[in-house]
Image 1 (spheres, chains in turn yellow, cyan):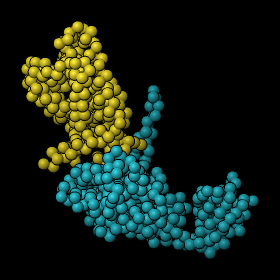
Image 2 (tube, one colour; image 1 turned 90 degrees about the vertical axis):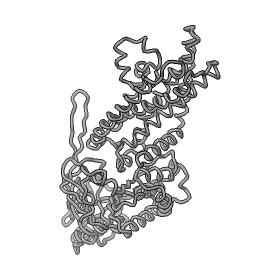
Image 3 (cartoon, chains in turn cyan, orange; image 1 turned 135 degrees about the vertical axis):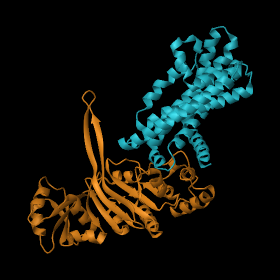
Image 4 (cartoon, one colour; image 1 turned 180 degrees about the vertical axis):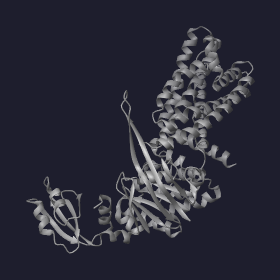
Length: 256
Length: 322
């Protein structure tokens, strides 16, 4: 009970404090609109009007990943800069119970990206928001948020040990967009990339979101995204435990 | 049973430099120290900057793993029973960082209450009590980024006490505070000890240690050079007298001449705005004033006085090994 309460409160606390940062407006709302606008014109140039909702969804999914990636690592670095990381580590709960809801909050912020992108597409470009399986679409979004949050946990744990892990974030933004099929359909990519994609939970989440919106069977995607998220959680817990101990050995928790 | 025990506690840091030819340098921050703090005691760890105080504290609160040796809090090992130690200890550090700045003081206290498993009903009672104790009542809904340095430090104290820990560790809590704020904080620390908590305090302010602590350990260059009650530590220099000389611009070599002067056991200099205050320790009964003034040459001299040694003089003597 205490664990569930702590996760829920940390998630809410992180959302509250992230949304008080001015940069949040840019990264979570404005940036996806830029993606959406570019995607709209690219797809329009391809003369396939039926794919406009696909384009809007793709831009939103790119925004969710950006929000998760920079939010997860940024949360730890922000805490280090504010001197909060040490009190958090010195508190009794395992750090997993603090970091996981924080990365979950980062991916939740990505929902703003998806929503603003879809509304922008509807208002500015007249893209019809007709969802084939609305309930499955919403469920797929929720599952994708969890899957991304757990992926953010695995990547974010490196920030505990390395103060300069931002380089890792910068490096991972674009490749994950490509490999998960957020930008272009996976069928256009070389065969070996598919193996990488199948191991990434967001690939399945995105597939389910698209199936929910555009038609198709969303349930396998939802199931695979959840299963992979559970595996990531176990991996993240193990990595975090090792990295936290190494950070206490190497004295990298504080700024200096 | 001692509330805090350190046995041959040692911590080194490795620093690497160079890109192609990596060079590793090992720094001995804490060199195998031993000390015990009894339950209900207010114990001071006193030392200059870089002496190893904060490193020692961070090992005790489980933020750093000792390189060797052991430490226990209420009998629990800080490495193997870290979570139990964390539940029993309140950690308060100095400085104005350490809180979620964009959120209010109240938000910070509520969140850390959750982290320490304080039930919601208890939170409703304890948070206002602590806000009252640290003098932040009425300002708790303001963002922390608008707090003064003193308010932030008082917020740290409140946070450290949320789970009503039996052991409280305060790392230079009054650093940078104005005199009134520092005095109020010292009163709060004294109240903690009166309430039966075990308090470990690090400071480099002598009067603070003298006024608050039951016992003090003086740490210098990672080693404990003396331990005892403030009165016992003062007795180290009880057979000495201290001559204070105000000098306006000490010439090169004057300090060395004073140091080499017969009978002088220790010399230190405090830089003040336009004046240097020379503190010279010498055996009691030895009249050195004229001899010392002779060493200073033509420098303009202000007030000259002899006085009884204080804890600060004992500290200077201990950390300089004179």
